Amino acid sequence: MGKMKKVLALLVSILIVSASAAALYSCRNEAGNVDNDTTAPTTTAAAGGDETAGATKPETTGGDETTAADIDLQTKVDITTVSGTPGANESEGPANIFDGDSSTKWCALQEGVTVEWKMVEPVKVSYYYFTTANDAPERNPASWVLYGSTDGENWVEIDKVEGATLPTEFFTDSEKYTVDNPQAYEYYKLEITAVAVPGTNVTQFSEFNFYQASEK
Ligand SMILES: [Ca+2]
Image (cartoon, rainbow, N blue to C red; front, side):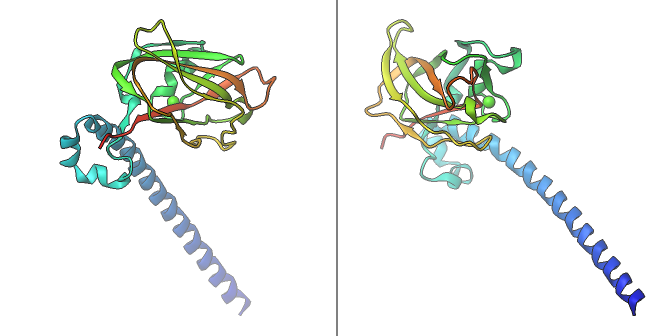
């Protein structure tokens, strides 16, 4: 009987291992689907500027009905114009906050950093949020000022936040910050004036997500 139990236990173990392997495989498939999905918002966002086109693609807009018509402003950043406090190395520069990829970050070796950029056309920032990076939440932005400009020289303060707490979890979206009475600007500037733990001497985040709400 003891041997029978051992054989049974072995069989059960094999089944569990097989099931786990199957689960892992299906996770990979799901991850693949997620990757596919990440391209969908870009398509949706591109169509967002043209509400008629968006309406003809219910399969891409149906997933997120409340923001389907909002414009993902990352798609309207002229990426060649992004400049600011350099990253710790060439692969961690400020343009990384607009690539829609939480695995790439802007990581600057100081507190008090600035990034400026030009949009391909004037846009209104209705709301925005950050995505944290892959490590070190003490480097998260805690205070910042967002500016807009029509000429890239004269700046208007759009929003100012002090003492915010971003998620300590990695690769995680912050809460949304709403801009009161958004106006159209072609140029934007973001100053991060403090990080979560003063004295860290490093500022980082992976994404600056910003949207123009649909006007109905
Ligand atoms: Ca990124």
